[in-house]
Image 1: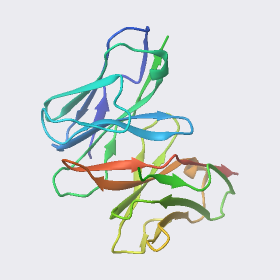
Image 2: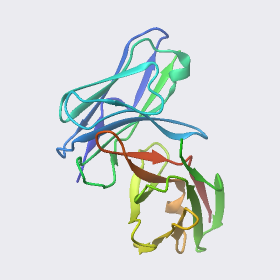
Image 3: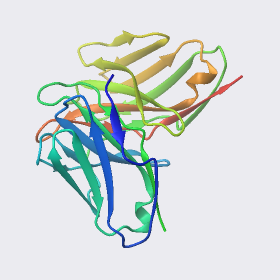
Image 4: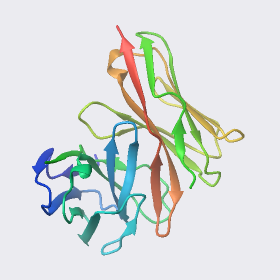
Length: 114
Length: 114
């Protein structure tokens, strides 16, 4: 089975802190994604990566950056956390290239910024 | 930009009845669609998918219908059970700069009444 693992289920951080959310997948997928999920807004794409060291902005990249130094790991970075970044963060991965298939999700990290 | 959306945000169904969850999409270039189920505290899980060269696909107790003429997608759940209570998302796979990325609707919450 595909496994996408997010390092934390729950996080509480202070405003202004630098926050790292880590995600690891074990299926050798090329693509990895970070979404945030808020009530009534569904899942919104923050950033995605289709190869090591490659990244693309999604719909809401402001206030975030990402790092993909290894194929299996995709990190989301909040440079200076703010209260409006309190949300559920979901990581996903999928095969890359011309393979048009579903993405597999981690269990989510609920981040609270106080 | 084009987006995926849902007709109904909430749906309550009696146990044993059939459920129908609807989704409208506007990107005519999309050729692959997925339904996800998200239970409380978990990441989205794949239920069923359909490609644009099909108009119907069946799984175990679930059927997805695709009407490309009106850009409409639906998920039918037969003999709804309490375990079906969750939020359901439709998603379309869109070709980006490097690879495919999923765009989600806002979700429909399905509540099953025992």
